[in-house]
Image 1 (cartoon, helix red, strand yellow):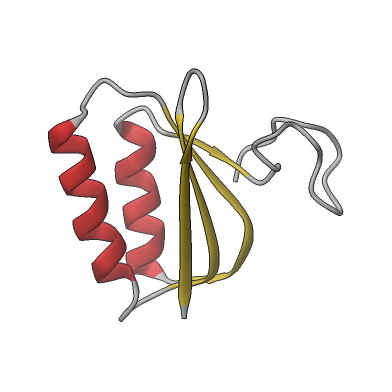
Image 2: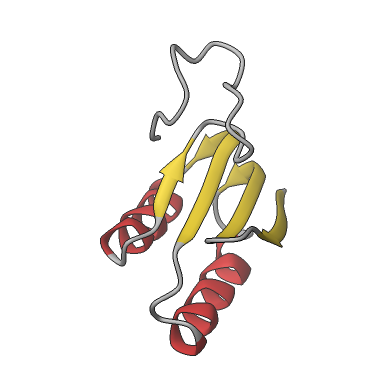
Length: 93
């Protein structure tokens, strides 16, 4: 299962994903991402992946599409604190 939450900070749209970034759950996120990109193509988006437990090929392809569109992928809590096991803040997945 894939969990998703969203909030808006002062300077970016923040998405927090949790669980499995895999089919069949990837299809809903893909549709949401494409809709968001269409409606707000210039918004700065940060996607927190620290709670993702598995990624399949479809999930990796979606992350690559998002990153090529300018999305910042991180495994660090968006508020700036470091996720357990991470060497420092701001690392990318």
